[in-house]
Length: 186
Length: 183
Image (cartoon, rainbow over the protein chains, first blue to last red):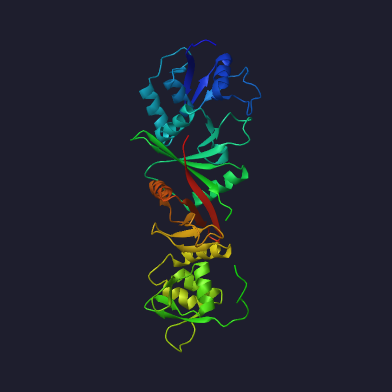
């Protein structure tokens, strides 16, 4: 594999890697992105474009894996501008990014958790390999945890038999703390 | 739990004295209190019961509570409203206390972290310190996530396990342990 920086186009609130070969490479690197129209890719080799969400996009940008452009072959978008745009279109973008980064930096595969009703679904090896993901919800230091949060989370985590985790993303201190909740059979 | 003395025995009379329930158990009931962790023994041999203990023992038929000697026994709801006058969380707390007791745990007052209880592993009361600190969370009263973290740290330093008891709208109690996760 070459170390060529991959071009991704910022399109609204998504990033698109048009070149399927490069998209496949990103996907193979650690389940980054999603091939358009393939909900559960069986292999990392596909011949469609890849979409990246803004959080993983910033991570790959910071790692120097991708560069972000405004149109194919177009002008490069700076990190600062990218973060500004992302923060506008995505609530709590930076604290969520901080949590994402902490998990990725520690070798986890982190995917969107929306279909589980949380922020991230976290795998040790990857979707389709692990039995079930850890479910992570991000809270800001000033936020509160409600009974509903815990019950909903607990129900989710027990049906898929995994831990439910609340991550506290403290942007000011650049610090992430994780609290794991597990159903207690009293 | 000992089955002895659970025959149709008359409940022991306890008195409500300035917001406190004081029990005067006979030898048998006193030993039950000691084994199952009820009340705090006073020098005169009487036991001061916490509101939860008093309510539970009343519900369980082990005590009857009067306001004055020879007075009429208070109903559960009368006692509840008298004890709850200055404690709006009493009912929710009681639901948790009762649920844990029904499950066979010995439950004692917590450390004042809020709606908290010390809960002993089954069979360990009197032999080992409480294994769990159970903290109640009610629907509609969220707790700041920072406080969850501080609580966790405190309870970790006490070498106990933090358990949240969530009381839902139907008064069912569901428990979740919380632990720090290092990635």
